[in-house]
Image (cartoon, rainbow, N blue to C red):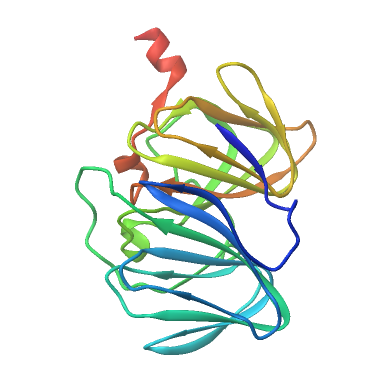
Length: 241
């Protein structure tokens, strides 16, 4: 597990947070009018965390505000993001190697947003959590992703996710608001807004929100296009097997 404080560096430019065979994460701070661009051979999800920007690709261009994002499939066309008058802070999620297994039919690539609708029960068939809502944003089923997932979760007071692991994908977990404890085999680690936890494949992890606190996060997987492909094992279930 790696704990990364994404708010430590307020300077402009790109800060690489994680880079590995399964994918990479970066924060890119753009001054007004500055441009970030991508290559067609790499699956990439771009999320605007602060400020505003404009997305440009072969299909045209469209504005992006805080919480808006775009997914560029691979292989695909070239794209770029231009920061607006107030500048922009972007979270870049890039895919790498994919886990073995079947992937749903490719859907058109395109736009997603953190605040499109209330969180629902998106984890039917899985257990080990309480008072936690999830919404899938970028997956094999929603936008045709093969090597990355972007999702958002909300933990209401008392919410938690027991120790679990994903055998075939790395996980990233970015706290947007609230705070609590990242759970590990060796004990809890406090996390708050701007903290990003990177969990390699096969490592046990979980989360528990602080008493009386609502925690909102953006999280996902590197190396898989959905939870089924990433794999999901509960420590409690393994211990009782």
